[in-house]
Image 1 (tube, helix red, strand yellow):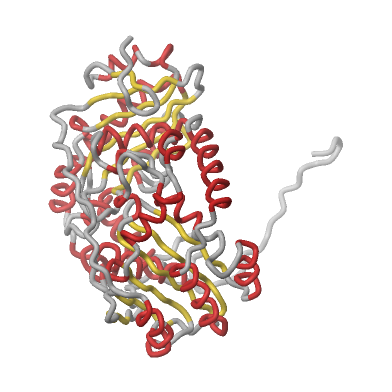
Image 2 (cartoon, one colour):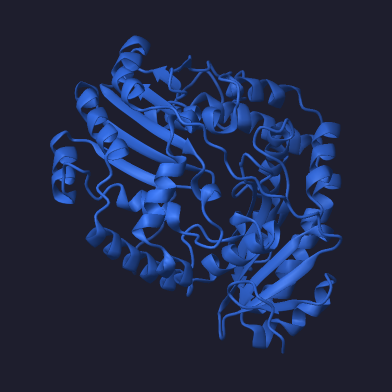
Length: 473
């Protein structure tokens, strides 16, 4: 306020209304989701088809997804699937990398190939009028790889540089060690999907060709399409691919999962002078198509799914140890993990681990009828606008095909959300979340934090290197 000026309280006349604006109006009835209609088909070569018509915008998005991904790699050479996905965008037998990029650009499209733990996916977005031309390019990328030795060498070196950078990232280190301890030394999921520097250095172009020849088959592929296209035109558009892409039976590798640990174990990776500690805690839970998956994720909403959750409330808002703390159940075709994680101030590493252990252990008993109703409302109301974009529709189709879910799984899960009761919620939580039998991975400053963790009540901490190998002090 400027010197010499008097503060004058001004009065304003309230606008007359038929209701009291000082009282928050009650929520209306729950906007139950009208599930988008999904059409399905199966081609003679074994490829499955999933689609949704959406004619609001003249856009189309489509993908071809193969079961496999990292799962099909040789455990001695992790990183092949990721390298292959990169190389497939570097030209085709008939086009140089520059020519392929120009052809995609001329159509105003985007095309991408990606590799995940359990699949590889070719995805494309385009205007509806350019759909057939873009599909032809995707067929060319799929059926006629270039196998360019020069581009392979460049991508291989880039991958090695990327791994070296990730090896200096505490979050990446924590993830690598966590999944190794969770799935066990002999499981492919214990290896980083990018591979290690040593494994990528050993990969040859022939390894990529062998993977492609062994696992790229329509018998393990699904075609997804959403947007301004009809069922009839979509099926007609892939008739050519059906004819020229011959079916081959594929047997995907299977691995035995380790037994549930008898007790919790802390593994510590030293990053000298780290100002923060990365904490990852978890255990194997259930597959995505397990009937318990949705109820478990439902209960997790108030535990660690966002800023309204218990973990966030205590570790960030009450204690100020971190910017955020979260938990989730990872969807996989085999039992995926329950994961709780945070990056905390180094000086509060022990206190944060103790809080995680305490919250995870008591949450099932403390889960209230109010928590259940908040989650029920949030789940149902968020569904109403969840599938408004073509991208979200594609996500739905890919989830259906990847995990063998019913085409109306979203609606079925919404009905489950309407009916779930407090006893069921507590039961499913106690079945899958037991912090006394979890893996605790901490990446931080061992000099100041390692010995303190002996007070956590979770046994003797074990010092390991960034690949999860024990270090004998």
